[in-house]
Image (cartoon, rainbow, N blue to C red; front, side, top):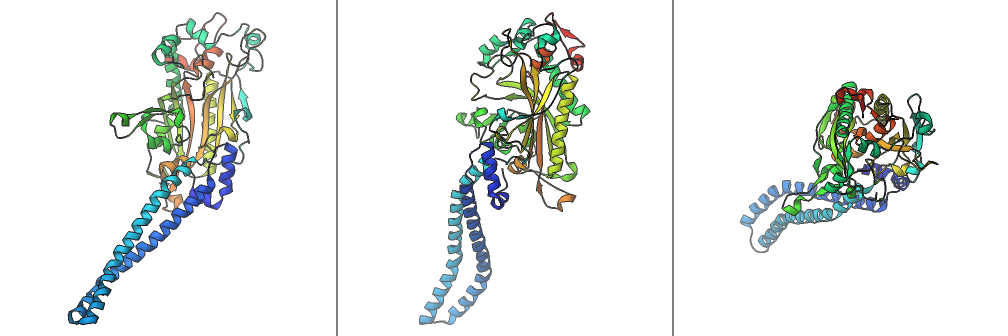
Length: 467
């Protein structure tokens, strides 16, 4: 959620941020409701102060009147009784006014909150302007010695590459047909060495982020309450991408939601908490099953393991102090961890700076990491795909956007005893089975076997190849 104080001070920044992201946001209506709410609260506060003053004064005043009433007669007595009744009525009248203001606030606040949740975090000034992923900008790329994505795979390796679907079927690593029979389109069943390789990737990635880079391994729920989805910024904008478990339809107290990333659970752990600055930065990592409806993706990557409804992911999250320079340092560091992991697997990859229109509502900045996949892209002269980049990781910098929604703050020496909203960042370490695509396609051999990348061999019983 954005800072309403910052919005009042510079509404044009948020108007422009929403425009650059292509996300509708009614800033003017939000400002009007905010002004109305603050006016109501100020009036209520004034009435409560008056109420306290009257309650403090009314007792002695009534006591004096009662004393005078004892000896009063006729018109004087009637006048004193009227004055006493007026004093007794004042607290009730003020209470009635305060209750009326409560009712007015109850009408304003739901709409104000709903509109505030729709206002995106403005992109950082150094993010390139663009409408969609088509305007994203390549930062840099890396390839192992002896391979250049700009040149045909066949010319460099001496044979035409097979797609992961063909390779994995040939080695009984996947069963798409039975997966679809079980769960419908975009489903699959990993079998034999496919399941072993999948688990090897996840175990290696978790060990990599925890043992080498000091992140704390944490298991978190993947079935969460709605406030966790709202708090992490996946609702309201991403509601159509999430799977709902309709507990209310069965008499339960509230619906639950399947998460699309371990980030939700890792961030939600510390919702409504005040952290000790000495414990920051918190570096957390989890491996979890993720669920995405892929709404709006009809006809896109319908074959294979690229765009699927269920997958497993090792995720990294950092919660740090509210300092832009520190957030930027962690963003670079988290991207560097992924680059190191992909180099260890000999996978060609590139970093892509996302443009403003591709950031989504919650990110001030986002860098995607894409791996080279020989089976993607348009067909070449031979009819086979030329190969293309495919997204495998996304590294996001969110500043206090999530932590403000989650009410996650810290206090310490640098804050002077005050509480301050934390900053948060997240990045994929490895998502499988999508990452299996470049692994099996880039490490295939002329005879149709698949070489197991060296770091994964200990997790595959020491095996060097499949097939």
